[in-house]
Every structure is written in C-alpha cells, then in structure tokens.
Image 1: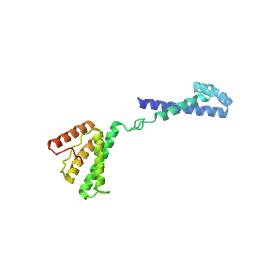
Image 2: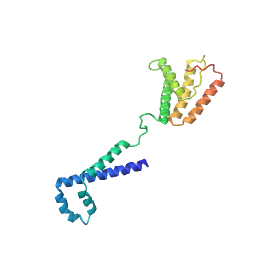
Image 3: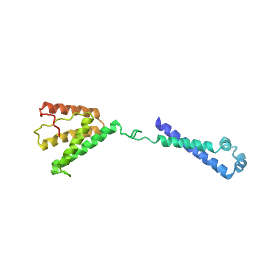
Image 4: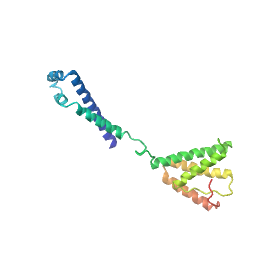
Length: 197
C-alpha cells in the first residue's frame, strides 16, 4: 500500500512539475502567442491549454512543491525505524554477527596460539559479548571453577558460534530455547558454580 501511494505521489509530482514548467514557458513566451495558437490546439487538447491559461502559475508550482516535500519526508523504505534506533530484529542480528566475530577470534587463538593484543583482550571480548547475551535475557552456561583455559574457550566458542548463527538468521526463539538447554545441560553435569569465562 505504501509503495502504491509513493508511486502515485511521484507520478503526480512529475505531472505538476511539467505543468508548472509549461506555465512558466507560456508566461515567458507571452500569453498572446498561446491564445493565438489556441485555435490550432482546439482539436487536440483544449481542456489542458484552457486550464493552463486560466490557472495562475503558483497553483501547479505549489502542488509540485508540496508533493515533492511529501516524497522527501516519506522517503523510500529503510530497515531502520524512523527514530534512528535499531529494531529488535536488527539488535538480535547484530548480536549474532558480533558473537560469530568473537567465536572466530577464539578459533584463531586456539589454532595459532596467540591473539592480537594478547589473550587478555580475547578474555575481555568474550566477557563483553556474554554480558550482552545476559542483558538480552539469554541464560549463559556456567563454567567449572577448575576448568582449563582451553575448556573455557571451547565452551565459549560452542555457545557463541551456535547463538551467533541462529540470531544472525533471525531464529531468536530457537536461540533462546537452545541457550536454556545448554544452560540446563551444563548444570546437570555438575560444573561447579556460575563462574563464567
């Protein structure tokens, strides 16, 4: 419906800009020439020329300006809401992309053995993304107190890669269910306390 309204407004804006230009040309050439040539145009388009001669210049110009202003105000569809804030779907997709980015950094660290900026930076990035998940209401699987660094990274990688793909693809409900399952599973294996990576 919005697309049809925008197309109609665009067509009317073009029509009124053309009429406005014709009116200005008629005034520039002189109304007497238009009236003299009117007899030749009687057979072709008397209504249009009659309206063009009788209408003041500001009518088509004002209509064209109003419709152009409306088109500028309405704009073409975008993914962002008018407030400039991200929609809920976009926030989850952004969280998913960021989770996949951190998961790829974990994988890189595990294969290469080092991370640009040191493992402290990787740890802070994992912690930051986990806090974002927690803030969005996703349960975070706890990690055993005596877990090694590799076990902690494996757990974080598994969580972030699964959640990242689901959220990036828009499967928020499924991501929540799997997050709860991962949380429950980690509690059932008696990992200790809710210490997180």
